[in-house]
Length: 512
Ligand code: URP
Ligand code: ZN
Ligand code: ZN
Image 1 (cartoon, rainbow, N blue to C red):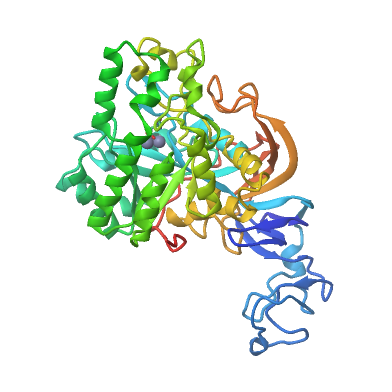
Image 2: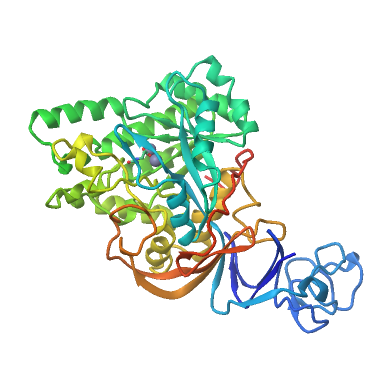
């Protein structure tokens, strides 16, 4: 049996920040409490019993901290749950001055993804190593149904690519691209396979489906307690705008944000929310990027709709001036929806401040600049869409979110871990530092400073869109199922990742 005691740190949850020690036993968190030492009468602990009491009838109301004379914390049964025996043989790691977060969850990755003639630079091996090194202990990747094929075939294919190759835990959303009664009958099969979240596309000619189909999918998935996330862009308009830009000879990356304008997104967001209203189901919007999209979300919430919102670091840190960079450099920032304007960034920070955004994923979809992005040198619409980010999401959001006063440590925990675990049916196995949860833990050094560079990154791609950005705060230790898996930004144990079979969505955190 392996035991690790993280001593002297500050444990962060979505609702609290408390000084507490964390005892890990094998793969799970065994106890969380103040000064876990196993010494009789020597500490203050969050004991629900009065000093000297032996019985549950003496339980105190509220969360008052009292001196415990029983040698440790109680678990509500009157039995001391941390004893000297529990602690004996534990490796003690001093984490004084560090924050302890539940392992971060990246809700949005595309590893080993095929796009026309290209494949992403990161596969499940490099992608999950990069994620882990940055403090992410679980990723949710997007499987994609091939038209005319089944969902189970897609899931099998993604398992083939991922199983045995991952260094952090992983699970799959299912992207439905072809809807009919046979596919509908597969939704309960997906539930049994641990897939409870879906994506549909309103854009991309080869992926998008109709509003009628989205309506039916929302209802079929809601019946299973799942949730559908949608790529909201008006696909017809993108095709029309692209043709018009090409006809005018506008073929450089500068044309990308024109073809994928803010209106192209917000119209689709509004339409999706209307479909959800009529279907009577909750929804998720993935990679939301504009002020106006956020306004439509507010209007839907005001009507009582349950709407979850994901955004990504690129929408806070990159803007549409990037597309005008010389030497085709703008191609590095071609992703959809595209980088927006300063006012959109401000609106997203505002939404964060008001608790209106639920999750921050990355949409990590990395294509090498030299060999892949370059394929669109004569035609912006042929530039493969996507950017890397899974390694740097936590440091970026901590530095420019928490340290700039735009979010609390608790909000950071909710946005990068706890809400994702709830929304995607993994809580409290994931997303929590509490007794019985998986010992997926990030020991965060709030003082570690550095600069993001492609040269140092683990992501197997030849650039980072965040090159040169200064960061403060970094994961010093990352535990996965109780094993130290990454240290100071480097993976020390690879290949420990497991498939996470997920349950129904818990959307109780999303209050309108
Ligand atoms: O540009 C992007 N976002 N590529 C990945 C596919 C998607 O739409 O999420
Ligand atoms: Zn998308
Ligand atoms: Zn995506």
